[in-house]
Amino acid sequence: MKKIYIIALILLTFSIAFSQDTITVMHYNLLGYSTSYISCNQTNNNIDTKEAGIKLIIKDVMPDIFTTNEFGDEMTYVNRMKNNVLNTNGITYYSNSTYQSETNTSIINMLFYNSNKFSIVLEQNIVHSVPSVRKTKIIKLKYLSANPNDNIYIICILAHLKAGSYQEDIDDRETMTNEINNWLTANYNTSGNYFIMGDFNTYTSSEPGFQNLVANTNSNIKFNDPINTPGDWNNSYTYRNIHTQSTHADDNGCAAPGGMDDRFDFILMSNPVKDGSLKVAYANNTYKAYGQDGYHYNKSINDGANGVVSANISDALYTVSDHLPVTMKIVMNPTVGVEKIISTSGLTFNYTNPLSSGNLDLNIVNNSNYFGNVRVEICSIIGQTVNSGNYELSNGLNHFSIDLSNVKSGIYLIKITDKFNGRNTQKLIIK
Image (cartoon, rainbow, N blue to C red; front, side, top):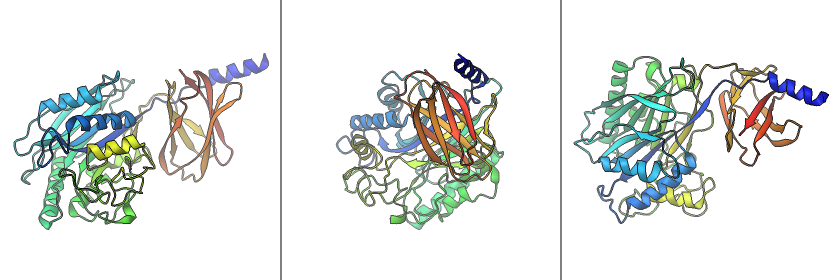
C-alpha cells in the first residue's frame, strides 16, 4: 500500500512539459511534374509512375511543410498532387499555396502544408530580371498553436536559381539572390523565422549567389546552412554524403546523368531559427539529403543496396526526379507551462505527451556547453524498463526520435540521466 501511495504521489506532482510540436520540412525538385516538359515525356517521366513514387516518399517523411520546384504550370497538377498523392490513405489535411500561372516558363514553385498545423496569411512574389526563370514565392505561415496567446510565424521563400555552369549563369544566380535580399530588406527587414529553400544550382559555396545568402551583413535576413558544410561540392568525393543530384548515372533523355555528385538543393534558415529566439528552433542533426547514404558517388541512387532507405524508396527516388529531397525538423515552442531541468548539468528538455503511438519526439536543450551523453529510459510505473539508450548531445537544441511503437498503452516514466548522475523523471502517457 505504501509503495502504491508513493507512486501515486509522484505521478500527481508531475506536470506535462510545455507544449511543443516537432515540424518536418521537406523541399523537393520534382523534375517537371507534368505530362510534358522539355525533353521529358510520358515515356521517360511518366506522371502516374512519378506520383506513385512521391506517395511512397511522402508516407515515409510525412512533411508538414512540403515545397517544390519544377511543378507543372496548370491547376490540374495541383489537384493531382493533393488528390493522388498527399490526401490519400485517410489523410485529408494537406492544402496548398495559391496557384498562379507564369508567362515565361512551364514550371513553377509550389508549397503544400498540413492545415491542422498551419494557415497561410500572406503570399507574395519576386519577379526577377533574369529571363526565363520562375518567380520566387514568399509565403507566410501562421502556426496554429493550442495557446491563443502565441503568434508564431514562419516565412518560406521558394527559389529556383538559374541553372548552368557558365559565367553568365553564375552571374544570373548572383543577380537573383541580390534581388531576393533587396526585396526582403524592403518588405521584411526585421528579425524573423525565415527559410529559403530550393534548387540553387550552385557548384561551390564560394559562388557570389550563395554568399549573398549566407554572408549577408544584414543579420535580419542572413541565412545559415543547418549542416554548416561549405566547400567545392561539385564532383567531389569529400561531399558524397550531402550530394543531392543526380539520382541517375544513365541518360534517359529527361533526367540529368552522371550520378550523385552535386549539392544543388537546400533549406537555409535565419538566425532566430538557428538560436531558437523567436519560438521556432532547428532540431540539431535532423537536416539531411533524404536517401543519401554516401555510397552512391557518381552512381544512380538505386544502384545496389541503399544504406538509409528501403529498395522501394531508392527506386522511387530514382524514378521521381534527378534530385533528392532535403529534409529537416524544427520545433515550435509555445510558452505554456514550465521547462524540465536537470539541475546538475543545466539541461532542459521537453517531449510529446501524451503520445498517441509511434515515435516519441524528445527535445533536449543544451545551452550550458555540456559535453557527453545522456541516458534516456522509459519505464513502467512498477519499474520495468521498456526502452533505453544513450544519446550524444551537441550545443543548442537536440532532437531525438525514440521508437515506442511496440510499447502498450499506459502510464510510464521517462528518466533522463546526465553524466554527473543528475536525473529528472517525468510522467509519459501513451494512448
